[in-house]
Image (tube, rainbow, N blue to C red):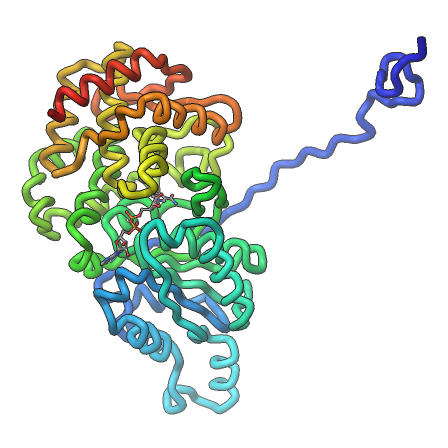
Length: 411
Ligand SMILES: NC(=O)c1ccc[n+]([C@@H]2O[C@H](COP(=O)([O-])OP(=O)(O)OC[C@H]3O[C@@H](n4cnc5c(N)ncnc54)[C@H](O)[C@@H]3O)[C@@H](O)[C@H]2O)c1
Ligand SMILES: [Zn+2]
């Protein structure tokens, strides 16, 4: 019998040695710039000027519809902020200097409002729109796309900016608690597809992030509160002191006292950012994903509810579930899990949703998470407040018991 042609051992014509193997490390350095400033679009705002300092040519901006509704003057304000960047004729010393400056200085070519919330992440419609607008308005890789809005708008617009010309500079102006304390600090963007949360997306570091807490004043209460679930998450993973701060300031937070909330939001943003920049794996090459604590079920719950459950509230439920999963797996003391539930409740965040009853469908979220990670999964579960451990296996029985405990606590 003849040897099959692909059988290298028996076929002398097949070279089993690699002709050559090139393997060279290549460091890619990016600068992660964040400014906290009030009235960031006021003419002459130093943070806005700094963010645009190395941006040249045409820029375009996309505003979250919820933000545009609450801040109807935003588009003209943005135009005013750009106009203030240009030196006037009187300030320039010569005509030639002025000509050179205006040829390269950034200008706002287009402003557009896009639907806020998960609507803008439904498939590729708005991402494509962003890319097209970049081409229609001559935005080059030295220009910028500006996104003003919640985490969803930053995700969808960021994806469009990342694929136009293979990456146009992206300036994020986050307007929700969640976007300021978590998502805007990250280096990811994405949209929902194939009935799965963030199924398509990419890693793309922002050119600049401008956080203006002034915007938070018009945020609907549900979304104001929702953003604190990510603070609870990062406190649980990394900062017991922050957890205690949340416990002692819950009332100030729920009554939207910005003096109390601001340092807490900023601490959360700092911790998220530190993890991404100094955790050794900004582009998530490995399987460990500590910032996804509480998220495997949260993403599934969002999708199962057709995004009726906002991300922040879904994460709160996911944190509660993971706490009792850790108890079932004998990683965490039940008294600590109870303390976590108490904090979530005092922040008026949910610990239960009827869709948790759809046990098998929710549990399937684990499998999706595993596939998303590429074969292995590592779910971060708590061992105490401020410490966690990666687990690679969760038994359906432990999951069911955790759900039962939550149901009892919620009723
Ligand atoms: N890329 C990442 O690393 C990352 C991290 C965490 C979350 N996310 C994503 O972020 C999204 C959730 O973001 P979110 O919690 O910011 O909510 P969101 O973007 O869904 O916005 C919530 C609602 O608030 C409105 N809104 C936003 N700012 C407002 C303001 N200042 N005043 C009035 N209305 C305002 C929006 O129009 C929307 O209706 C999810 O899609 C989640 O997956 C991404
Ligand atoms: Zn999240």
